[in-house]
Image (cartoon, rainbow, N blue to C red; front, side, top):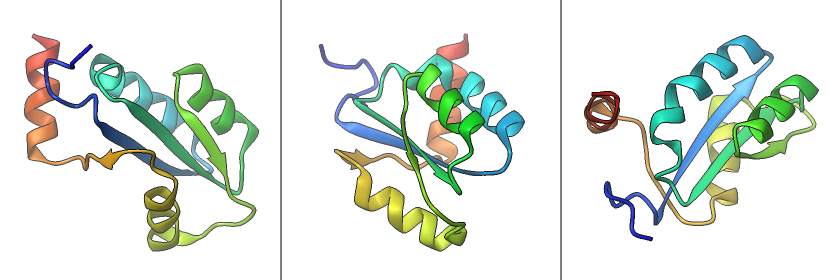
Length: 102
């Protein structure tokens, strides 16, 4: 089924480190559009069990790292693990979120 926002062939990826409460709020916020994406991924730096569990419970692939790779290292890992074209959060994403929430 083709996504109405043409995101079915896109990935959404998040990077988290030692902040399960923030990750949970982020995943809840993205929940209104998450089903539109064909690939959903969370890189859990240092592999927090809480963050891995949250990501999986929201239907994301959860990939742990053994250590904190930093933002650039984590983004590189995200890019290498994506299955399909990445979709980056931007002003456009905010517009999509606003429309979906109406």
